[in-house]
Image (cartoon, rainbow, N blue to C red; front, side, top):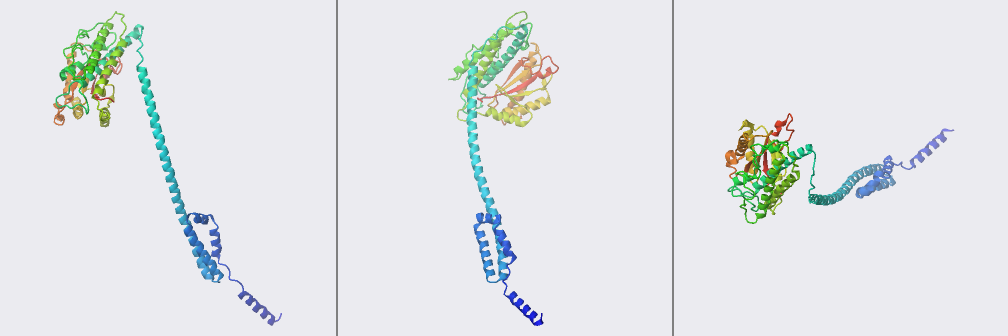
Length: 458
């Protein structure tokens, strides 16, 4: 081939190359890939404004390419890719906000459903409580089935149980006497309380409340003979007015006074029957049913006294508040029984005198009695063995020492509590042991119970 022909071919190639179209920028291909992905679809749904701006930049980039402005198309294409990324970020925020709103809606619906379920549960629980109460009332309304005859060992156990029930009855009636006794001068009744059956003075009421302290031998089963310290239950002591004596009741409280006197008379008859059943060699059935009825009668009298003193203008809760206060102290271990809030103390005495530690503990409790003058206090002294008539005055002196130590007027708290609560001693003997009276730990039966008698219904 001649040189002329070669030159002609080269010139033709240059001319053809000059007439070829401008190549498409790679960023536009990337842009097409981005806008076809799931992120772009999400942006179009949750951020339509930002997606539209990115699409506008893409249109401008294509228009620049059509005008052979390769550099402008490159720039606009990169801007469109960045705009799509921005739109995707906005869409993620919008999607999160939508999910949050939906979660809040579901939470509100769940809370409303939970509130409905809780209300339904409360309604069902109230119905269950009402049914339980009806069952209890129906069960209690059933007549007591006589216990019937039993062998010697069972009769011995029944006699011990009857003596324990008799003690409980005396303590319950004693608590009722404390509640119905007239308040000491300056002592307010609980809010809304009505005056109830009252004795002529506090000393007489406290004496009426005391159990027959001259009957320690009735605390143990199988007593051979009544001791000399055991007078007949039909003979009330000087401090204990007879049930036959009229009560100095306030107007409108005659029914309560009569109920309490009737319960006291039942206890005296029970004591006489227990003394007769405890005589060795006499095959007399233990009055276990009579003891149960006597306890129920005293509990009914105590409940009636509380109802008479319970205000109708506010919900009762004084007993719960005192129990919470004593529990929070962490040193008393209080419990609740039918009488009220009970604190059990041991090791208060060295001989017949209070120890320094015992005096300190009772001084702390005196501040509690001063802070709660509406609660009468019963000091119940339990022994770990049967005591004789000779020992009885010493135990009575111990009980009086505890009463004096608890009286706010005797301690530093007198100025803070000018209105002292009613405090009365009770000698329980050994009728209510907490451990085996013949075991190695029988010393734990010797204890002092400080009972804050609850003045209103629970």
